[in-house]
Length: 161
Length: 305
Image (cartoon, rainbow over all chains, first blue to last red; front, side, top):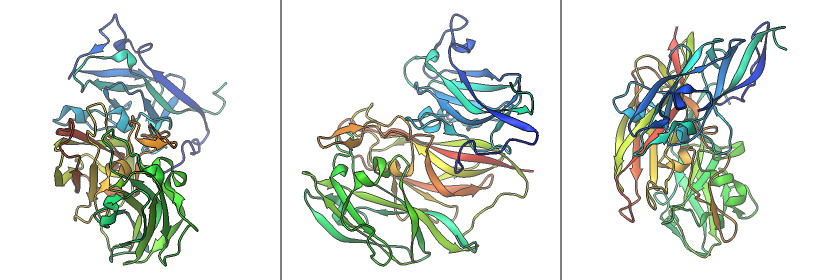
């Protein structure tokens, strides 16, 4: 958070490529009918929605952007470590309001600190887990949710095209 | 910075509690020689500034665009030759957790005096004008307890939400505890909080103030700091005056990308606690009622290895 973004050297014998993963109702079956209803009722939640990484390279998650549609959201990394708080008695505290976490007014994605390699390590082919919760008093259409993951893919030298 | 000195985040608030003349700055009024005596415990290094006023009934800050200021260093050495429009000095008046940087930094001695002159060139009074001077206090190393990273550790980006439930319209809720969970240490680097809202009626959650204290109850500010200066947030209502008429705009280029920063970061070991105070002074007007507010502490979990 204190550092300039993406100013970190790649690992030994590696090269990095900027990579953005976008997830929404068009590529997440859980958010998209007719498999299930896209409406999330007040006080309801939907858990463990997989955000699947490509298989060609490991991904280092360095920033996040969420659309603000009234939902609260939690994300767990590829090893099921939550990157925001959970296991609280008060349900809204187990999720994050996008406006307080990863929704920006024209300023870009929210930088995620942490990880020993300047990014949250997501192995090739792994999946982050998305949790959503409706804290409002009205149905929310999950198809309005958009999650964008910013970071780099790390390739061995000679493996990129 | 001299390595034998220890920096500690600090906000000096200069508002009506410090100088009653700031409660209402009349149209056309000039006030000179507003002086804030700094604490005796440590010198202060000024690194950024911000300001706000009380929200109007329409949840706007309609007098700030007419405010002109002139402030001085430790020897009453003014940093501008005349009054400057605050709107030309800083974007969004330094609010939404993005105070205007002061570079190079200005060091005030312990017990020093922070001086500012103000001028309201508008046609109406500015109420509860509050200026925040953000920087660090300098202590000899080891004087103030501060935890440090273990020799070997793993890190993970993490956020701790705090719920301030059913905060009354004129409530002071002091001595609230925040506890870091048992699985890892936590480093606070930034913070976001509920933005002032219009959706639930005029002035709903407009006048919110916050004070952070360490585990010894040593505060990180001399008074409550306005939420809209201490914290960032996305989805702000249109509160910032633009133009002569004026029209009101939402802050642009702010939000979680640029959260309200705490510098230097605050390291809290697992199972440890710190304190915070919250104040709301919206008053029982309009549709005001008890409201929930949320704070989001942003930083990193530290797992010792």
